Length: 169
Ligand SMILES: [Mn+2]
Image 1 (tube, protein in one colour):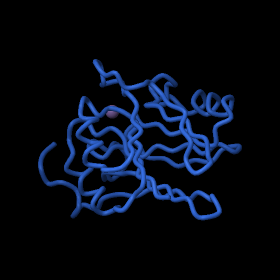
Image 2: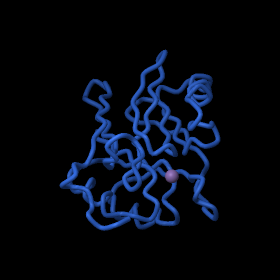
Image 3: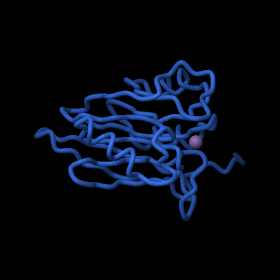
């Protein structure tokens, strides 16, 4: 199974579309918030099951604040991250995930990608497809692949300078 994980699209979809075309086929997609009302549009683009949560900019959204999902036998907590103050550090969110017996916790909000394994919990942040804040400022995302034995692999990926949109965001 192949899962595309993105976050923080903020109403700009050019890079997201490029990422989807590059990474197809994928079986499932996860969006970690700040879709800003475009969740139905993004689900249509994805053309596969989409799990999506509300971000801090999703003011009038009926999306859930967080979800516990199962991916290929692994338990994952998905949430935007602001309720766990991820901009200040990952202690709270990792503690919450560990307390709930999660294998994986996925979040966004910081616009800085990260893959971190800590005491049995994998923390994933795909960064932002639209407004990257890490060094280099390339749009980022994560591809999770689970092989036939149920072993997960996580790849943090970036669009190149050539691939990213030239339109001013
Ligand atoms: Mn955001």
